[in-house]
Amino acid sequence: MAPPLFSERNNFANDAFIQGFSPRKSLGQHFLKNSSIAQLQVDLVNPSSEEEVIEVGGGFGILTEVIAKRAKHVWVYETDPILAEYLDTKFTNLENVTIIKKDVLKTTFPKSATIFISNIPYSISTPLAFKVAMSKFERGAMLVQLEFAQKLMASPGSKLYRASSVAFQSMYLLNPLRKVSKSHFAPPPKVESIILYFEKQKSPLSYLMQEELEQYFLFIKKLFTNKNKTTKSAFKALGILEDFQNMVNPISQSLLKKRIRELEISEFFYLFQDNLSR
Image 1 (tube, helix red, strand yellow):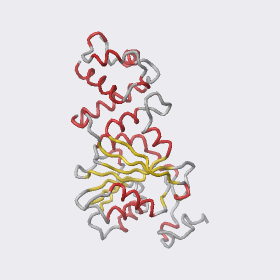
Image 2: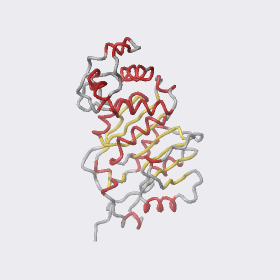
Image 3: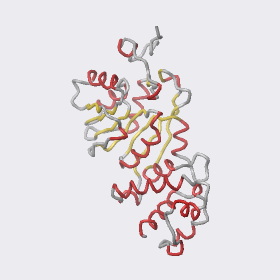
């Protein structure tokens, strides 16, 4: 018989379902077992009774329970059907909790939700980061793998700098707040985690229509497939721009010799605007 998932005293020690649950490696399941960490995440964001929250990866509901006490509504995405049923039962008497049994990457977030608080499943970190950036949340707190947080916060020229860095920093100001030891999870992951707070910043992207924002993120992803090339060479390789002499923005002209991995966040937008204008 497998050992219990939570052997020490905590919120789940007497829950027979949880003690008998077998985490699925394919879903990257590592469950937070320290309720004070969940409380800290919610305190940082401080949702009001008039605000709605998105949570991805409900797990055993340790974070859901804390959010539900503060927010007007919490929309919880859980793809594991067994856990989704467990959450449905656990929160059946709370009208401000909705369990959504769908793949979060294939659905649209409710427009009424303006806050994002989640313990991010490691297996979907990158695509989910793009989705969160696309959704223009007012603020949020994510418990993520430390290395992934470093990628989101990476600066131009860094080995960790990538398309997700540009996308997330284009929309949000990021603040790493507290490292979380792997001992706070069951089963413990192989890596450390960190709470990453973010809030929407004033940006030209805020005024883009949803379709244009999707085009911008796709534009970034394409450029980073040639991250070591100069902008001019990358554009040629991708067939994005044929006539460099007619680029509208003079700033864009000066960027043609820079490598993609060296471009500043704002410079990607200059290039995008020129691409749209043609």
